[in-house]
Amino acid sequence: MESKLKLDLERIFREATSSGELFDSFQKAIKHKLKDAELFKILLSNIILSPDEIKMYTEKLCREYNDIRYDIYMWAANILESMHAGEHLETAFEYYRKAIESNRTDYQPYISMAKMYNPELDVPPKKVLLELLKNGIEEVRHKSRVCRAIADLYDILQDKVMKQKYLAMAAKYARGGM
Image (cartoon, rainbow, N blue to C red; front, side, top):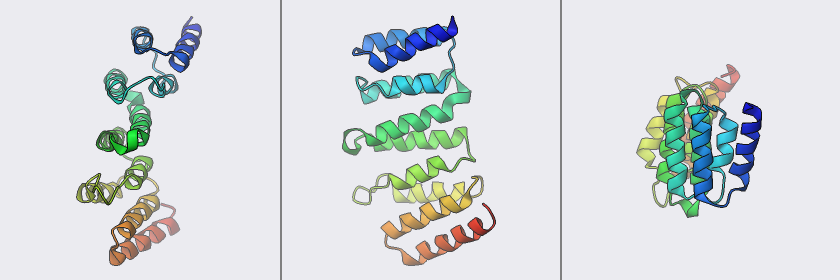
C-alpha cells in the first residue's frame, strides 16, 4: 500500500500542473507520515511552484520530519539560489545555515554558501559569511575543503594575505586527512 501511494505521489509531484493538486498530494503524504527526502525533493523541484510555495513546503517538511531536515534545506537552498536571477539568495543562505544546524559535520553547505557570494551586492554579507565559514572549520569533516572555500572567497575579495593563510591551512588539513 505504502509503495503504491509513494509511486502515485511521485508521479503527481513530477507531473502536476496546478498548485492545488500538489498541495492536496502533499497533505496526503504528511497524513500517511511518508518520510522520504527523495520524494519531497521531487515536489520541491516542480516548476509550477513559486518561491513562496517552495519556502512553505520546506518549512512544513522540516517541522514535521527532523531527521530529513538537512536534505530538504540543502535541496530548497539550491533551488532558491538558482531562481530568478538571485532574488532569493537571502533565503537560500538561511536554508544553508539551517542545513548546518541540522548536520554540523558536513562540509557541503559551507561550500555552497561560499560559492553563492556576490561581491557586487555583498550577498550574503561577507562579514557574516566569513564568520560562519571560519566557525565551521572546527566541527566539519573535510576541514581542508572549507579552508579552500575561504581562500577562494578571500581571492574574490582580493585579500592575498588571508587567501594564502587559508590555502596553507587547507594544505595542512589535507595532509592530515582532514
